Amino acid sequence: MKLILLGAPGAGKGTVAKQLTQLDGSVQISTGDILRGAVQAGTELGKQAEAYMKAGDLVPDELIMGIMEKRLQEPDCARGFLLDGFPRTIPQAEQLTELLNKLGIKLDMAVNIDVPRDVILDRLTTRRTCSNAACQAIYNVKSNPPKQEGICDKCGSPVVQREDETEEAISHRLETYNEKTAPLIGFYDKAGLLVTVNATSSEAVIDAIKAKLNR
Ligand code: ADP
Ligand code: ZN
Image (cartoon, rainbow, N blue to C red; front, side, top):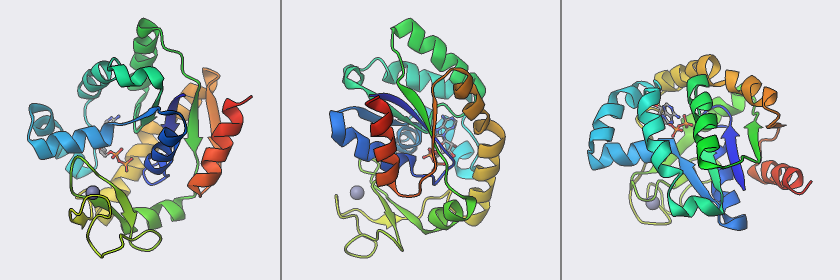
């Protein structure tokens, strides 16, 4: 399947994407994971992105498009992909449309995961992430804690609160979402690709996506 996952920070895009990869071998492409990996590795890209990310601001479109143009041409994308956290601005969406045309790739749909704001806020403040750049497993201190406190079940690395998950950075990320990313809902609606799912459990979101794909 070839999907875009839309939704506010904390809507569950990453969780849904990871579960969808199990269905048909499609790959999850998270620009946030790629950027955090680059910051940890200290690459040129990481150095350019770090300050924006820490403040909860968007990284410039040119950097993101450079990453995605390469990533979408890697062989593993042939089986399908789940775009998680990209596109995030209208210019990114427009350039993605051009890029996909150029590569001869057709999207199945853009799924808007619509979750109430109070649920989002609660999730983001209780979310914890594995500090190992190669793992980045996601936990929640309330609903999905690691078996041993503070230690990743999958790789044994420390599980931490992301630097952009302080209350201040979170509210800034949500503002940025409303201003820059929410307009993509209209963009993909016009393109005839939009599917909105109002569901807070990832299972319900996945069931809705499966039902749409099978039609
Ligand atoms: P979340 O969806 O939880 O906000 P992500 O892991 O998707 O977090 O992204 C973390 C940060 O990485 C963003 O706040 C932003 O700084 C940067 N980022 C990720 N994807 C993009 C993108 N497509 N365009 C611009 N910045 C991005
Ligand atoms: Zn881990």
